[in-house]
Image: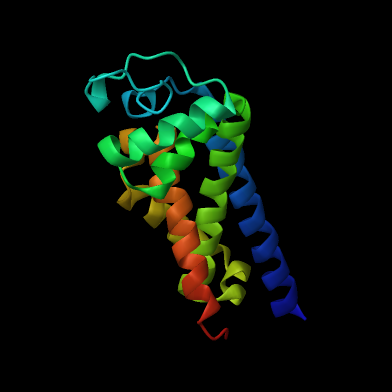
Length: 171
């Protein structure tokens, strides 16, 4: 009985930690400034202008985004997340920040579950060490703030880890 209570308490504390990470990540993303990496995906390409010096009008419509994607694909980057970033311009920045913040918390959750199984969520110590490891090992301080980097690294990592989880046996 005592072990079940400890496991339940560990699970609740782990979920509270992930909730706090989500809240802090949303605030972190919201308080960030526009990053150079994102600016190229916010503007229409100019005629004969280098990709990194895009000075065309801001992308504000779906048709503009559809027109900009082939240019970004051939001149900029062929990464699917970079192309998705073009369409993120059509969504309110607050919604994008919330989505990125939630995805950071989901990323932490998936790291815990893939590395230790679902039962590891009942061990607050395991969850705490896993989350701390992710925060310490990845370059969050500047390389993870641009929206395009969130899409390229956090979102893709979640997709890859979930794919791995599909073929894992659970303990």
